[in-house]
Image 1: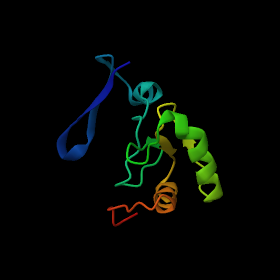
Image 2: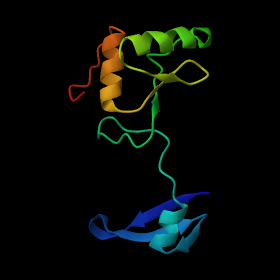
Image 3: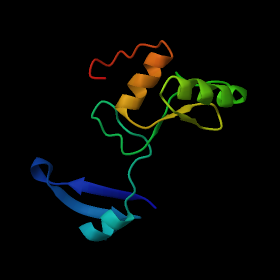
Length: 107
């Protein structure tokens, strides 16, 4: 399902569309699903983020989960070995436990 909204003057929402058909705001909100990735720059961690930089080989997932649990940062991993980061705090603690540095000054 494809959803979009158009904006009028000064950023005011003008029209709502679902599958290229104009609908009411309530219908749009019922059909609209949030994006699948959070945005750490704005603190929007409504959905988990998969980290490529902190990934492990799929055969190492069990060991990585045990290591993270011992470090006090329990973390789940996707089948491809990428950790599922659930918040900015989780990202900071996981990076620190791995000896990594985050360049984001706000994290």
